[in-house]
Image (cartoon, rainbow, N blue to C red; front, side, top):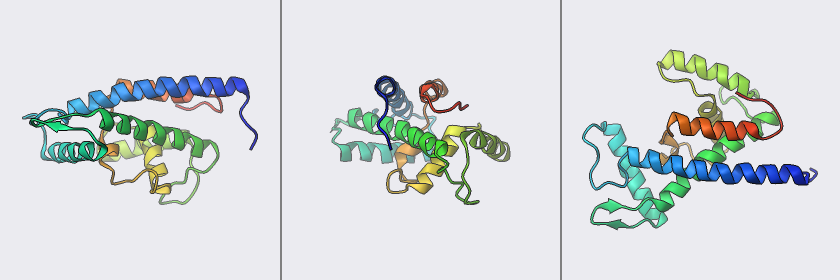
Length: 180
């Protein structure tokens, strides 16, 4: 495979740096919405959100974030969450553009446009919001379980819609195809 032209390398570098900053701000906000850094969970949190919060606090400590007086630092966890979300999206796009994103049940390659249609069908069936990138990311996770562990609590964290859209916009800005 030939090396990227210098202009493309610069564009990729610029997008990746911007995506890292965007993803880290989004990750910190998402973790704070789950009260991961707070001494106590929010009263309105469901049992599932409380369990996820506890898993994330444990993961933060594994990554080296300190727990002091029940307040959990989340700097390392923020970085890890941002990395996981952005790279899962980037891998999904790479796989799709190369005909390598495989539908786990049908065993056929799918495009990002097809992921969008499938996400709409899934959303209608489950009464949830359609998210083509999340679906493509799940397909990539099933294909690359050593890289993106499906049971990883970080991948259960949902970024705010405006943050997700900002990352999608950055990803689509890379040359190589038009995706929605």
